[in-house]
Length: 258
Image (cartoon, rainbow, N blue to C red; front, side, top):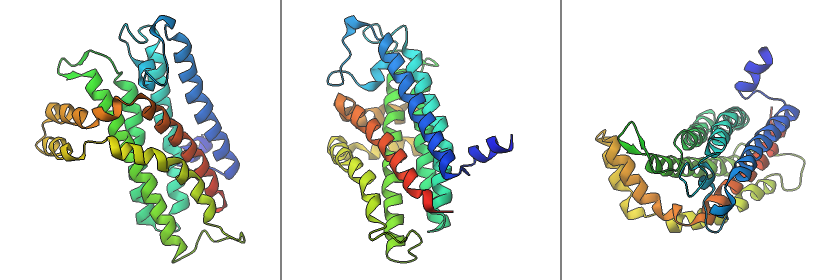
């Protein structure tokens, strides 16, 4: 029981975090693969014409019988990532406890977005008779993407701060900080495409609606802002692949910190 509490708080050993990342990756992608196996052949799933979320859509033209497997995959991924983000926070706290907490907030918000994308499938139905499930799903996915992007950028800034000040990540290696460039290069191309597809001029409206506590308006407006992302099917695949690689690679690189 003590070990479970330790894992849930992100206090893994380097070996334990590797096992956790393996369980996270294999569990998530294994469930996604099962959802893909259940996807009707007549509906022709392809990364070029279908978003990954199509595997979790209960619409007849997508995956009406096995969509719930994808929902479980997203919920599992979001929940299993929480200890990883707490592990990252603990490792980065040597740079700045406040900075690490802010980074953890971004990442944990992204985890919540993952869970919500699983709870609200990408289908043409209504939740509580008010919100379109599709709108809730796309809004949750878009918010998840923003949160993880902010977290990734923020942790990059923390590393730069450490490089030119405390140097707590300095080791006997010739270029100790250069190794962190790898996971960031993976994400860079996705960030560029993401930025080009966002309707930045329209982003004020959903924020204003949320501030007025108009949940229905906020969801609808945020869907309009992120619809440009949803129409580019390959982007969703690239984003989730890049996020998977970043989380595994970046977390493992932190192993030398106490």
